[in-house]
Picture 1: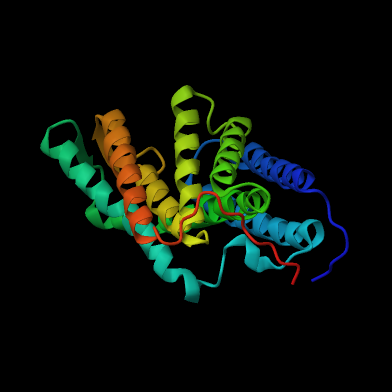
Picture 2: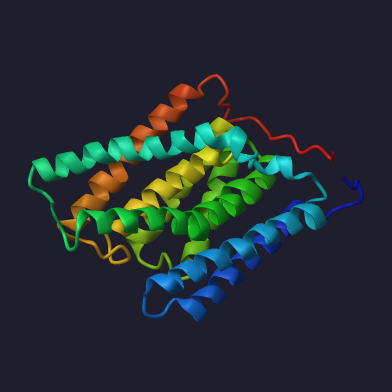
Length: 269
């Protein structure tokens, strides 16, 4: 990889962050009108097609460093952490669902057939991976957090990318209310901590896929369930329980590796 002078780290971050916001805003203006499944699929494919090359080019032209530093090794290496991230959300979330249903806080009924619900769930896994989990984790916990972590202690890099992710949510219209802003911040802090603990973004991708898929499945996007008490379900089963338990699990599993004061290496070759 070239050792020619490269842009200063703050400039690289501003360029990639700004380009990411513009991509999401442009796609939102073009596609986010009345929801339908084909438009969702098109948007998911275009998002990945645009964002992944954006990060590749930024890494080559702005960073002048190899891809490896971004924390996205091949799936054959990262699949265990991908599944770990999914399990870290799904298992405690299932406990949360059982608690909410058992205590009568929430009622859920299926609008269509169970088979149709399963087909929608499988489709949403793919669409969430392409539209949110892969591109967002690659940009924020991959590119931006890594660049911050080469100059700042790990804990500061986690906070920095979380601030950028929350700003991204605000600018793109995904997080304009107080509760959405808090969700974006907490979510980003958790996934940034996953990156700091595991050393790559696969666990975060798995967690992101599981969370977003179930949230959409039981919301208006999935449109296969009627939920009474959706606010309680969102706070308890989708948020508080899986978010807190997952971090306890990751911290326990990677306690020997996690160092909040460490800097990430960024070799030129």
